[in-house]
Image (tube, rainbow, N blue to C red):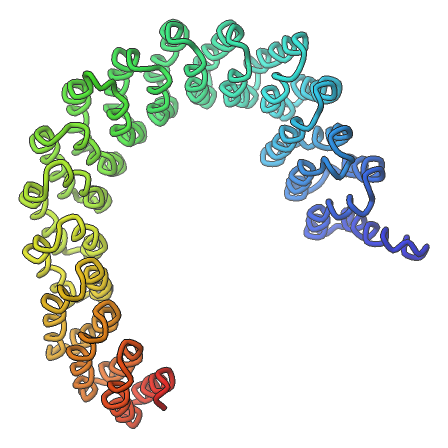
Length: 589
């Protein structure tokens, strides 16, 4: 071993290299993760001459070890001696870029892209570009798919002769026999187009784009749609109609729903890329068709884009396009058979009110909101409630309350407790939007009714809801409106409701402040200490512990301490335990 020669610095290296050969995968993985330490200890010279060849030779390993190696090598530039020696990292990464496991190949390509930036233009042509060519003409599809991700990083920095070769290689890969390679080429088409000169975009990229967009495999065609956005942004307006639109129209009506889904998903980006004129003539009818698509996934993706699409329409005739072309489709989607479609629409439909203005909202959109609020799918109802504020801004609170509030009240009393729970969670938001007078008039009774719900989760959420409302409306409102009702429950014959009073006091004491807690809440808690039910008594001890920090020392000594002492002597073990705990925490013991 090296240590025997007295050279201690190499001893750990020997161990680590042994670990790289170990049968235990975890040991090999740990060793790969410490590669930079090995390289530092070896120095740049030995890293280049010993470590890298060793790594290149041992590339037959478990995928997770190879993945770690591919990632490490991307950060190795300084460890091999800086940019002038960075080409030494290419052989191991080239081998990694050809393995069968996709994640390893992708990580190797990511590291190659990273270190390509550190090559000088000369090194790029001498070392990097030949690697790309080797990968592009490899026998296995794995190497050819990896090559697709490397063209765009070396193209801008090489001579025009090499550029022509790179374009030729990319063309060849776009018509490769293996669908996986065509798929990789299609996924990088937009990126490659961005680094090409405009003339070549028109002469080379458009023909490749057209070919890939009509590929026999739908997985290739849908990736061509993604490239369409990049290509459309590069071309001048007058060329779009002839070069891009025929292919895009064809994609929007593709026989495969996956391709149509991709068009729907990228619709807003496509709309910005092609500009207002083409949007008006071509994209509006295409969008209508996607909203009426026979596949629910496509309709849902299109429904998600309704607000964005309408916002980006040209202002001069935006309203007319929405009212005549888009709104009829939206009305149909409100009663769609698929709940994902309805839910997607409900998450954006409220945004149309700001675009269409007060009169159109009241006349056309409110009936739709109402229908969605009564939908049997809870997600649809929630998406509507959570976006009420933008409608409120447009039509005002009175109109909103007359039309939508009855539906909200209906949900608040729904037989399914999860629906009630969801409404409670939105109550503070609603209260903030509707204001205090309106809240007291319409919703206060609901909030109090939830406190005596037969489901504990509802009572718990209602308690938390009260605290948030007091934070919004202030202690004075609480004193007049909430506290008397809560304290009134202390005499309820049902012990669960009496316990809810204690939970409410716990939640409200801090937001209501010292005065209200001492004068109104504390006497009720003290009185409940002699309740017949042990569960109530030990919750009294827990409540006193919770509200203790809000009270002054006088109240603690004269009112809290005697009660806790009394509970400490209780016959029930739990009551004793919590009373003792409260005395200790409040430092009254």
